Length: 266
Length: 171
Image 1: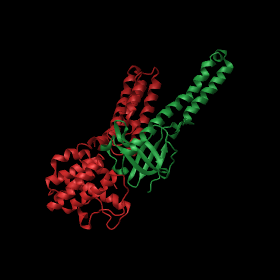
Image 2: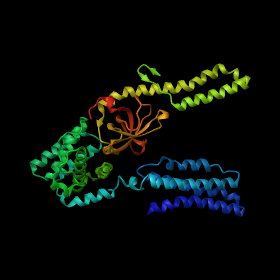
Image 3: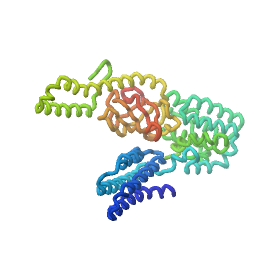
Image 4: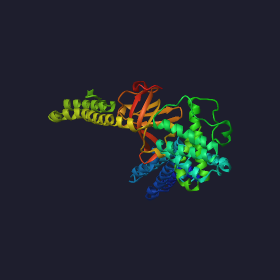
């Protein structure tokens, strides 16, 4: 809601400034004309803020306050030139706002990314909460470590921890689906570590695991897409297990949310 | 032009600047005796407009050529989808198809490279060793950085981009 108001405020502020300039010029009070440029200056800062809040940054919108200061820092001698400059500037800001909205996505996600879970990921974690809350604290912590190391590209460490977790789950008789997730991540992290291509045969989830998986698995297929999908489901399942059963790791897991959202995307 | 084993490339912009200033200088020299008397330093100065970009390109290309083997040894092969904010500063190797090439004329090419998992911007601050065109299947070596140094989505600061056919890798 705040962002919607801010979206409208950009052209409103800019054109109101130009409108007041026209009124002041018409009323013959040109001495106050220089204050009407504040509308454009404030609108520029607001547009830059809206650009800053988006995950994908628009360098043009971000730099508008600099242009506002360059254009309006020194008042023009001719009132008519000031009005034309304000109108053109307000029109430019409106065009940039439309460009920002259509080419640089929705605002807000960047500002909140490190503080709370984004919608689609939160939905998946809620869906799996009841089952995964039973994960032991130690296994959940292993899952968190695997997710965080994988996000940082520390694949050798991932292979080690995922292997230990899979062995622990097997000996303790824990959830088999988590064991498969650890093994899938371990196998694929080893491939990344040694820059190996997709193997001909690889680990995958079983049909009975599908209720806990974020994406529909490709059972019976053994192509590159199935290989990728197995890793995405495994990583998201480990993220969910860590989030739902290891409260102390939640703040760190938020830093890996960017990766989880990428994996969750189609 | 080749110096040692480094292919030096001068941008079309540098050539255009050289040509424009040469024309200005010729016109000025024809009409002004004062300019004619200064030609002894103006003509070498004119050539510096070509020499300086060439030297800078040679230096950056040599630097990148030295770094490429280090990256080749350290970088891990990743899928583009897995490149995220936590990997900022990490050397990576990606393989994909070049979907876009921009700013090649500035010797600062920016590629959009896609694999089956997604696409990513690949920025290079010098010209690549061999020309890379849209549609080429390439291997990129580089470091994950933010698009605008301190902010923006992760992109690859490219040290080496080569056609997979040239790397001799089996796909």
